[in-house]
Length: 139
Ligand SMILES: C[S@@+](CC[C@H](N)C(=O)[O-])C[C@H]1O[C@@H](n2cnc3c(N)ncnc32)[C@H](O)[C@@H]1O
Image (cartoon, rainbow, N blue to C red):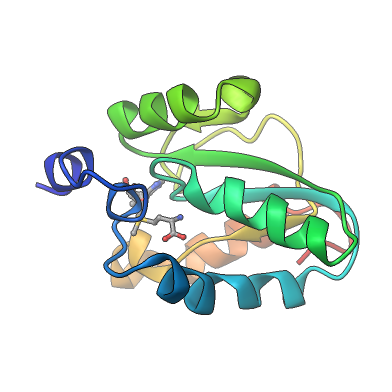
C-alpha cells in the first residue's frame, strides 16, 4: 500500500510520504540541520525518493556545512526512484531493513523514525543505530 501510494503521488514530497507544499516540507524538515552543526556524512534511514537527502544537503550548504547524504530504504522500487532522481548519488542509496542491514561504514549523522520498527523492538533499533551505524561522536 505504502509503495503504491508513494510511487503514484506525482510530486516529490508525496513520493516521500509527506503531505503538503514546499513551505510545509521545509518547516518540518529544515530543523534537522540545527542538529548537525558541522561537516559530515548523513544517512537517512527511510529515504523513500531521496528528497530529504537532497534537501538536507542544500539547507546545510546554506548554513555553511558540507553534508554528504546517503539513504537506506526497505522498498526496492523507492530506492530505485531515489537513484533515478539523484543519479550523482545513485551509489549512495541502499536497500535494506534498519533492523538487519549490514552497515558498510559508519555515518556522522543518522536520521530515522521509531515507527520503522515494531514497538517491542524499538529499543533494539536505537541501540543498533548507536553502536553500529554511528561513527564516534556522531549524532
Ligand atoms: C515517510 S517515508 C520517510 C521519507 C523521508 N525520509 C522524510 O524525511 O520524510 C518512510 C520510509 O521509510 C521506509 N521504511 C519503513 N520501515 C523501514 C525499515 N525497517 N528499514 C528501512 N526503511 C524503512 C519506507 O519504505 C518509506 O519509504
